[in-house]
Image (tube, rainbow, N blue to C red; front, side, top):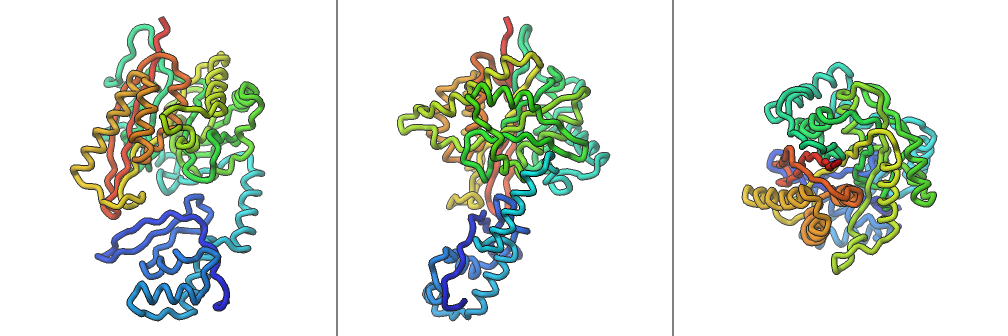
Length: 419
């Protein structure tokens, strides 16, 4: 093995962290196929950065010596590192491919998508989860319980069309979630909730749905099969749920469900949709020329309009992702946090008037550069809402000291006039 090439490292997230004044490298699999995250040294990271399926052991030892002042690297160091990575499924080897194939087969056969983040990002015990959700509502930064005073009011003749909710870890942004859900429950109790989340990994499609029901500690949330059938038919028989693998561990749908289960007083169903990348839809001049995706959005709008039931769209999105954790060269400072907030509010201002042309300009000039993952979901809503208004309900910033990085998020409500 020492005379051959090293295996290829699969795509990973790389996050520099500090532990006791020592810089280490945290690596994780964005598809959650690898058994667990790993923490490695900068020396180890330099070595695995050359795991491309082409470099040899000799290549790595020579590069390592040149990088670290003649320090000699032994073959067994590389071999042991490769063995650890392969055991955790970080390398593109037969071991990984067999495991991946088995996981795909198991997920495809399941009728229910199991809770992935319960016990980590939110409580796994039903009673504890209910108390946790109520704690978010009653938090000083929360909205207060549904049915109590303090909700933004609708004007005469207006009806609720959509809400924007964060999908940041509930332990961080839970109180911000409550502003959108209180707005929803105080003004509507829909039969169907169309959730436009974000495919953080594993999909290049613009829309990825699933027919699986969703399990949470509070029970099972039914996916609306009839709505999916109608949407697929209206879109020209595009099967949006054909490749639903990205739903396996994706959190942007899952995090909304306990709030819906906790707040609804009648049976409801959901349409779980993950939105993919937006960049390839925008031409250099700022125009949108991908008619296929625009047609899919129009088909979704048509399906909502043709359905006699009460339907609300839920945008499960976050805002900026900035700092070294996300690949930026400079750490986030107090000054840059203020600049980020100002830029985020420029988007909220455009959404308050449903100004689609301004939103497209912001995407091209700012939002995509700041890794605002709301882009595709929000644009889809703007394609579906011909008129109305949006209202910012809450805003938050999560600064992460260990990586000097930030994630921002907010809650909004969207209404239309029925006059």
